[in-house]
Every structure is written in C-alpha cells, then in structure tokens.
Length: 487
Image (cartoon, rainbow, N blue to C red):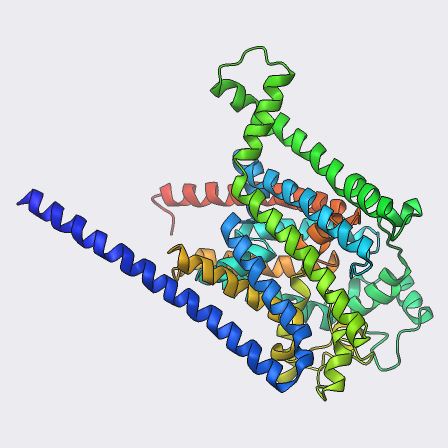
C-alpha cells in the first residue's frame, strides 16, 4: 500500500509540474502580450510615444536580468557584513566594470545622456542613511522592484514607503530648523524663480543654497579629455570604474574569501597562483550575478544611445517638450520639463508617483524646486522613467512565472513595519544623496563620476551600522522570548 501511495504521489507530481510550467508560461506570455498591445495602442495615438516606450521595454529587459541574477545591493552589503559572504558584492563589481565599457562606447558615439553629480558632503550622508535603510527592508531600490514582480508584498510596501517619504520630504517644512542662514542667503542670491517658495521648505534651500553652488565632473572632464576615446575608455572606464572595482574585488577576496578557500583546498603556504585561482573561484561563484550585470550593462548603454538618438531626431532636450507639444501640460514643471535622465534610474520617478497622488489629493507641491522647477508630477501613464520601473516589475514577473518562482508572499507584521521604516530611510537618503544605489552609484561610477564611489562608501557605513542594529534587535527579541515574565 505504501509503495502504491508513493507511486501515486510521484505520478501526480509528474503531472502537476508540467501543468505549473504551462500555467507560468501562459502568464508570462500574457504579460508580454499586454505590454505589446499597450505599446501599439500608444503609438496609434501618437508616434512620439515611442520615446516613452523605449523606457518601458528597457525596463522589461532590466527586470529580466535583475530577477535572473538576484541582483541586489542590499544583499551585497548584508551578506558581507552579517555572514562574511562576498558573492553578491563581487557580482556588483563585475557588473560595474562591464557597464563602464558600454557607457564609454556610448560616450564616444556622442549620444550619452549622463551628467555628473555635484560633489559634496551630502553624498556620503545620503548614502549612509540609504544603506542603513536597505538592511531593514531586505532589498535596495532596484531589487524592491524585481521582488515586487515576484509577488513579494513586503517589497511593494518598500516601494510605497520610499515613494511617499521622498514626496513628503521635498515638499514639507518639517526640517526647516536644520537650514543654516547661509543657505537661505545663497538661495536668494542664486535666483530661485519667483513662482517657487523661497523662505520656506528646507529642501528648496538645500538645493538652491547648497547644491547649486557645487560642481560635478567625470574623470574624462578632469583630464581635459571629455568626449574623446581616451577620455571615455581610459579616463571614465579604466580609471574611474574598472581599476577601483578590481581593487575592491581583491580586498573582498583578502578579507572575506581567501581564508575559506585555502581551508577548503587544504593549502597551507599559498603562492600567487593559488590566490589567482581563489579569485577566479570567487568570480565563478557570482556567475549569475555577473551575467546579469553584463546584460544590464549592455542594455543600459543601449538605452542611453537610443534615447540620445531620439532626442536628436525630435530636436528636444527633455520629454516634457514632447508632452507639451501633445497637449499634456498638466504636471510639467515651470521650465517645461519632467524627470527624464535618459538612462537607468530608480527613485526619482517613484517620488513623482507619490507626488502626483498627493497633488490630486490637494497638496500644493508644485511650488518647490524638486517638483515645480525640475521634475514635475506628470500622470503615471505619461511618466517615462516611471513606466521603466513598471517595466522592471513586469520583466521580473515574466521570468519568475517562467521559472515557477512567482508567488504572492505576505509579510509578517514585523517585516511589514521594517519595510515601511526602511523604505522611509531609503527615501530620505536618496533625496539627500541625490540618488540611490542605481542612480547615485551604479550609473555614476560606470560613467566616470567618482561621486558614485563616495555614495557606495556611505552605503557601506550605513549598511554596517544597520547590520549591527538589526543583530541587536534580533538578540533583544530572542531574550524577550526566553523571558517567562515578558509580556
């Protein structure tokens, strides 16, 4: 009887698995069909929507690669500091080096859309706040998107929190007491538009009184070789990204991988060849992440190139010009612009989602620099970078369904609270640091902007403190559970 039941179970399992694969494949095909039909519909309304659709389809590609490689800066920081595993961190370094080469090629072509970030103390502080937050959410800005595509409700809460925390942070006057008088004076001297609030709103004065006075430059710019082959490949790629990535990788091997590798292979007196084989073994343990990084690097470079071509074709600087020409003026800034980086970016468009909702609910948030002057609050259906984020979710959902990894996952109450609080910190850190792990680090360093390494240093500091705080919390909770008198 037992054998019969076991045989029956095996037969049922064998029948169910193909059915699950088929169902997942149907869902994946349905998502592709939905995006395709929506694209055709948009083009039937106006062919210029192709500019926004570039963001959509590149977002789908990013989602596929992110889900395949489980590409997550939070995992890189947490695994390194919590358990001493460098696999994800090494994969990120490999991806950085590869992306820098495609970015250099696009720069030489003349179609790069990248602009260097202003250099200042805000970068490391913002990175630290952001890095602290990602430890508690269990995901960075990009991984929260692809995990949402896998059905993770906790990651959706992170997106909700990071969106609204940014939108409120740049609009509210809660932190006015932090504003030094020099910022207020500088903001007035730097000529904030009369349409915007000048004397209220700490973020406006942070921007106009501090950020606007800072300078930014790529390695090629500093070498006086901007736009040249040598500047792009030697300055930005080799000096700005590849050599630092190699140095960090060697450091990771020395502090987190070498000892275990020597022990596993029973090597007592290692030579240079043993260390090189150890580094190679560390690389191969990050194969999926490295392949994902290669794909992301190629497509991120292609996105800059295609966006640059379209800008030249339509003779525009910003997507806001196309929206206004089509009659969609609502939510466009007073400069006639919307957020349109032209390359892979994450957090700003999420702030716009929440900003649009709050604006519809009656909050006046177009009287500040972030929304009113620079990024606007366009409808989510007309938000090109926002549609890229949705594309990432859908791309991850496609692959997750194909691989039978899609599953609705409800978080515990504790996980939900951490997701909201961590997302809040990520949102604040992203606005102080002028970006997240993608915009302020990954896209920056790969284009020769050294401020990205500063943001990474801040993330490492914040991540280390976050791991310590999280470990303390877990130990405290365990002690309370063991206390028979605990309530």
